[in-house]
Image (cartoon, rainbow, N blue to C red; front, side):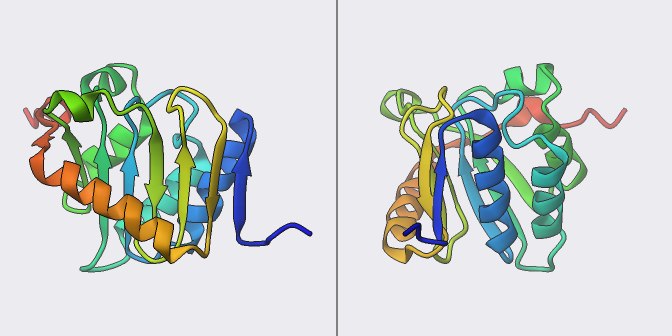
Length: 162
């Protein structure tokens, strides 16, 4: 019997659906570790609607994104970057600076309560996760927080405002 809280993906469409399920559960905070912010991942209408909902959910709203190449995502016009530019108080991007962190090859999203989606290889669509696993969510959040504290703001994506 399948666990209704389980998240599994083995292709792009399933990964998109898993992201939307996880984001729909989130209230005010999510963290995304995306070494590569690639086209087709977290830039469809459903995912962006959920991210916008979280970002505008009130004073506690916080979406943090760690990526290794924000400039490339910006140059390629990823819609997550555009959303971050429109909602800069709620959506923040940072870039790790330490070599060990820049070699990190997995990707994950956590909702800070009990949900996570983990891709062992960030460039592949295979993922596993759960909507109800606070232990693994806490472990991934702790790793994210550690990297976040030492990362630098992704200044290259800021709108010029000219």
